[in-house]
Length: 498
Ligand SMILES: Cc1cc2nc3c(=O)[nH]c(=O)nc-3n(C[C@H](O)[C@H](O)[C@H](O)COP(=O)(O)OP(=O)(O)OC[C@H]3O[C@@H](n4cnc5c(N)ncnc54)[C@H](O)[C@@H]3O)c2cc1C
Image (cartoon, rainbow, N blue to C red; front, side):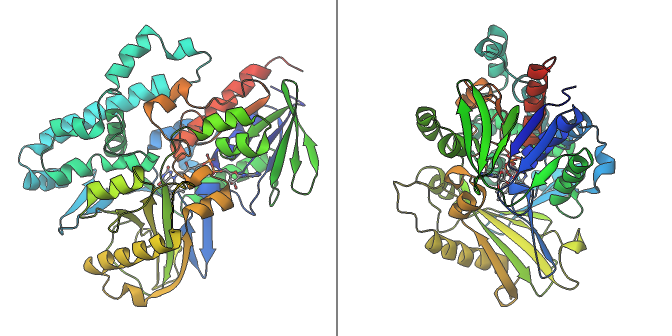
């Protein structure tokens, strides 16, 4: 126990709140400073006129990781919030009219696959079991542990593991061993975009994403992903954690090898033994710390893609969509290239729709609907002309055209209101560098493990990081793991210190 030690956490994102719980349980007096008026960050929520939207995260991936991290915080996941299974994890809508239910129902999966490509179901089973064992190897050796030195990461055993983890082969080449039909190749590789990765260049290691979905299934938290945030915040408060909202941290004051205090926007100064930055890591180096050389180095790394997000409150209820829907464009390859090669958006982008009301009626007033649409786009690139308002209008028209074709024929007449977030909004509202919401730093193999920015500052040893841009990576499950790893490091480092 670290009685009397004080910790400041900068940011009340899921990573910051989970860390606050763990540190408070271990005797730290914890204060959390958040720039916005509510917790959650990219896992926050918006409520307007009875419509409830998840700001970012909607898909509850990898339930085993949630369970593990909640247990490490002294919480039983099944008692923390209500989560219901989604037998159809998502519906995939192809531009030629084909629809694939991406489902844990084996019989349904078999009949769909065999119709598209005879013999492919057996190969899917191999793909999933290989992918799931990659997930377990990666979790044990790459994602779920702290690296204390380069030799923990680069050694003979791990080189063998990297080969086993298929880090040397591209996912889109690897998938050809299993499927010929273009829809199937897309259906089992597009998930790279979840972590802001290009499906055409990402390593086959990422086959662990669809494999984990099909092996562990998917749940949805009743009340939205924000119910996870609410549980963590109430647990933290019960442990004495103090939250301060609308308190933007403007500076971390350092002295020799120590981070001494933070300075808030209103010039208040707060000291602590430990400072944990949950705000996006490259932003912290750039804006809050004095080391400009390190910040310039971080700036040169690869960043994940960004997104244009529409939240629509509808005055009519539609029954045609699944809870999670993915619309694949007729120009799939081009649409991916536009995002990752030129930091823009195709005229016909792929997009995702979250339509929770049929499974969770509390998301909209009775007889009405609530949908959110996420369009992956390039990240903010100051060397390019990026007319986000024009791209937003293009995306909107294409989305409406596709939704009309899918049976929502009068959708444009029933949008009561729209809230739209552009890459620049994620930058200004949440301080996510380049608006790269699925990172920010991307998950190429040379930016993972020991190569990812570390969760402890190399000079100011009482300054730690937690969240999507440090180890192990982005997405709620990995950010929860990040909080576990960062807390473990802090507790290990402070053990025995008075
Ligand atoms: C559109 C979108 C869709 C997504 N979909 C999914 C999904 O389906 N499933 C999934 O698992 N993940 C998804 N994600 C990713 C997931 O939301 C993030 O990985 C996760 O929420 C990041 O948590 P975090 O704690 O690292 O950071 P953040 O949520 O960014 O939290 C950081 C906090 O720090 C605060 N802050 C910043 N600067 C300061 C400052 N100077 N002072 C004080 N506070 C500050 C911010 O306001 C913010 O609250 C999605 C993200 C987006 C944006």
